[in-house]
Length: 457
Image 1 (cartoon, rainbow, N blue to C red):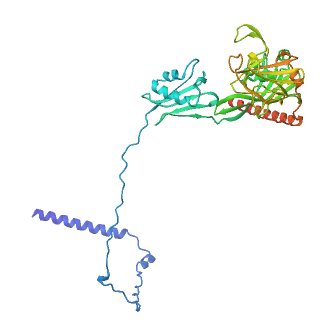
Image 2: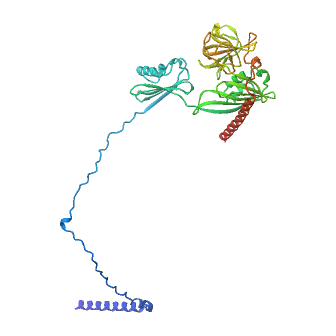
């Protein structure tokens, strides 16, 4: 009885609560605006049914027999089996290189590189077919490329002027000569003479061997011992054959200007390989002169010396130019060939008469041109022979003499050749060459100065 009374009370209370909430919700709402109320009464017009037009078209009927499906199987993509073979891996290589020392043979150097006797013999035979191994000199470089187990793959011999002889191991050992492809580069430099031309060039990082060329060119015009007081300026322009950063062969002078005692001495060398040079004083042509051996090293001067063969003190009646066998020898001034033949210790000789009192002698020659005959007229720069070691000589060189009235005189200081040489060059062309050389020198000096300044910054 009590339970029924409780449940009835709960139901009455719940109904009363719901009624109260509903009344409060209605009373709390604001009235709806008339426009919105009117909009809620709108309904769309009913859609017209579609009109079906009758046509004479006939719907095709397909018989079941007309429908046929043909199954054509497509070929499957053919996939070639993957090449599962691994690429061959080259073994790591080791490079060994060093210069040949004095007295060493190729076999000794290859032995030092760790090669066995059979490989050394094969390499020497292969390289020997392309290069005379008797010409090996200190400074030549041997490079050996081999595997880690000392099996040689390539051997290279670097010799003069950037030439390399390469032996490559393959099915057969093959050798070949690799010649460089040098670029001709022009350089310029300036030096101040304090003690000697040689020291000035060396201090200015200019090839010091140019001192020989300058002494030879101006020896009969300038007395370097007496006329140089110190402080003279020297400007040079020269050419070098370059393979990358490496110089090939010897540099060659193109132009030189030397200020001495208020006068300007200038020399222009041509680039035609003749070696013939034109000397100017204060802008005027003085004479044309040709070096006997282009690019050679002065190895012995005029005067008393200990003879290199006999050992006693004797008068050396000329100057010696050391150069490779076969290097061309050129006449230093115009004249007539007065003698071709042999003269005792001089070996094979060519003598050229320049007028009635002056003669030049070229000795130790290995060969004379076939077309050169006695009595023939030659010009400065004409080839009259090749450097050799005939007669009494310790090695290939040119012995060059100047004789005046039959007596030897110093070729680097006597001016008789200058007096005997004829003015055969066209002064107009010679002056144009001088202007071009001056312009190029100024341009290169400015470029060198700008580059040096940039490097310092």
